[in-house]
Length: 314
Image (cartoon, rainbow, N blue to C red; front, top):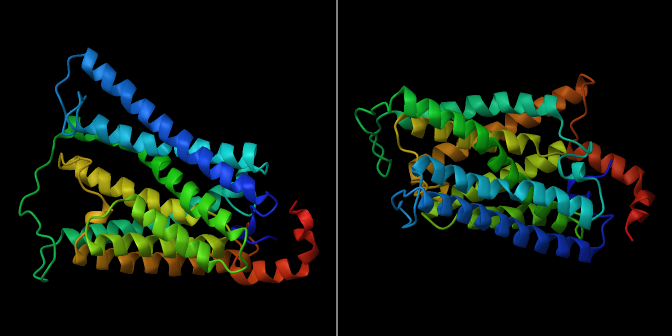
């Protein structure tokens, strides 16, 4: 079995570079195009200007359009693998050549527990210096706005989070891993890109994003697929957004890059704990003879035994 970060090896180096250019240009054009269409529709409908100075249908639609602009990179990335690198698009998902749904659902359960635990801890009043203040009474936005927000978020957040994973932990990690035996350089490189794409808010927020990228990159290589990374990313974004929707605070003004040190420290502990649990479950599944979830040790053994198969590279 080929290690996850080597799955793009059969593609020539220039195909990886061309595919990267295709992803950046096409994804950006689709995102801007969608924004222009919605903005034009808002102008025709006589809607007032939003926070960015353009006609807007409101904060919820603005946030949904931002998520959909990111989500546009998902099909573009899959097409780049299939059309330009000329390999099965499913190899971006896992070493099995597809998204392992059962494993994804297991990881979603673990991630939901971890993210909810962080949400509860950070909502409690604290006297720690530097911790974010918590409002004494968080008002409920009302069932109408909350349910509307919930439906929109459930529709767009999973695709947005998955798109970020396929671009960073998928395309970038595999693209850089093509030239390297060790996974650590591609893991670190994609983590820096992932953190940088979220903008610069606070040093703590950047550190949190960097740790998120490194840990999930390592878990991706160890488990042979994106399922664990997608699960945590989806739960993190969805649960946080749903809590904000409940309080009528859905905006595009703040991201994970803006975290204070207390929230970042709590989140990092959760990320590390999630990785430990997921890797433990992966080993148990292999021991029980369930659908294989590749670990570094297993991949290293099978790669060494099948070394001549690397001749696939043109």
